Image 1 (cartoon, one colour):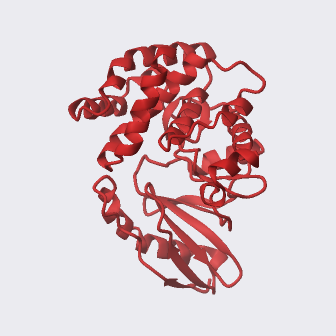
Image 2 (tube, one colour):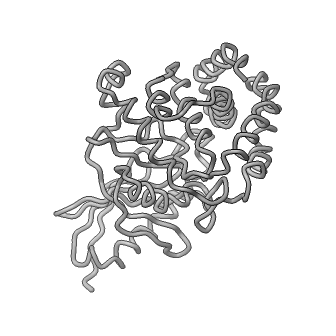
Length: 320
């Protein structure tokens, strides 16, 4: 095989934010792994391959791989657990009828996971439409339909993806796991949104009872609100793969919009078009999403979004 010539057009953008800087060393350490991958991949044999690192990508090192004829996206997780399972989830959703970047190659090289996928030449919905246009053009409605479709395939277990299934066997085990305890300790120690800690026992009880009754784990995006390209139909990308009860994923979606003081009810109307939404479970899921995002938001100093969440809790805690 004729070895390709690899040209790095830039260097990975290192984070100056203390909440993200722990991965800076990892970003730089992955450079020779990327070059080794390109050199060994037959598709690139004899090609001049340009590698450009995207400025986005908190949980993965994202690079645009470009030859004279085509472009790809190569993603390598910065954590040994975070974002694992992305290829599995995208494939499942693609089979379910959701438009996602097609996976061309995946595997492990020198102990590092990678995914080579289709490059989508389109803006993200947040940059393509105003909030008013999202309503007028039916984007929120389409999002609700897509999310519903994404939740139809049945998963196994709950939480982070380990060997193709959830880290925990039951929803209750995930709810009481080490990650949740760590978040509780941080919120308590730093006195961030103290109201949420008082509500947690009730939130946990509502969600645990619902999950046991529904008895189904879904392939959840965990960051659905913004990671969508403005294509026709919409293209879903960049999940933070988690197996979970579907309401938790719906709640996290609404939580992300609430951070910007938005509540696009059209998502919920289309998602629950053929069933009755359990309002108590939905609100518990939104509150759980707020709680789980608090640590990161506080570390990044996002006080405005924390205040927006506080306002929402004050106005809606009576619904639990």
